Amino acid sequence: MARTTYQDLLDAGVHFGHLTRKWDPKMSQYIFMERNGIHIIDLNKTLTKVEEAAAAIKQIVKSGRKVLFVATKKQAKDIVADYAKTVNMPFITERWLGGMLTNFATVRKSIKKMSNIDKLTKDGTYANLSKKERLMIQRERIKLETLLGGISDLNRLPAALFLIDVKKEHIAVSEALKLNIPTFAMVDTNSDPSNIDFPIPANDDATKSIALITGVIIQAIVEGLEERKREKEDEAEKEAVAAKAKADAPELVTVERAPNEGGRRARKGSPEVIAAVVEASAETGTEPAVEE
Image (cartoon, rainbow, N blue to C red; front, top):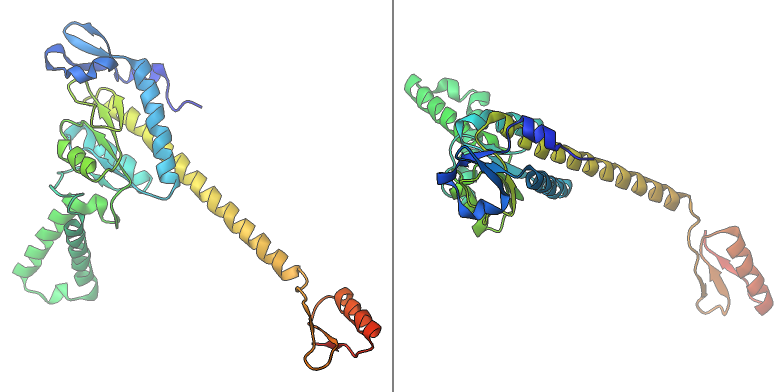
């Protein structure tokens, strides 16, 4: 089932590009026509690309990995933050700090510092500090929360990035490129799509367009999470059935020659096997040894 339609894209204004004089020639394959000095994006290609991106992101999430959402432009930050929170995915909506990915160890230290401040507040140490010290710590906590609050649960590098406006988020794109992290992005007519693994030609300035495309990606993530949950449940059920079958099955029996007796020894097992050992011993004239 399609996650969106041509009419939905049209209604959201996804087809409106930038002024023709601001275009990037590398976007020519996604431009349908020019009207009143503005490039019009080919929505058929948008529809195809958004479905490809959604399918790929679904598989990433299904494998249990995280997708980092990046949108620092004013009209996109609130939309992206709200969407990312619904599926518990990390997000950056304030400012991209240089080295956020390439120097991730240092970023993790800053996140740890934020959690340490929270511990001070809980264990009562914060209350024993002077008013000036409390104020300084409080300001630092607010600053860290603003910049890194969206990635506080990110313990390792994300498996992919979803960006709004690759021109504005060029530093994030460069870092992802260095680390071979797949990128998914809304790409307008003034941007270069060549460095993006899954470009989605779309209007990255209108809030309706941003909300629609981001919503499709979120829908794919939800599907991936649900499939992962079902697979885990099925696996747990199979393990439970296998464990029960193992518990109900009769123990394997091995028959070996008893030392210095010339007879045979039957280890604990099914009555049929023990009877067979007794019969074999009778033929040889030796006393069978059956272990209990």
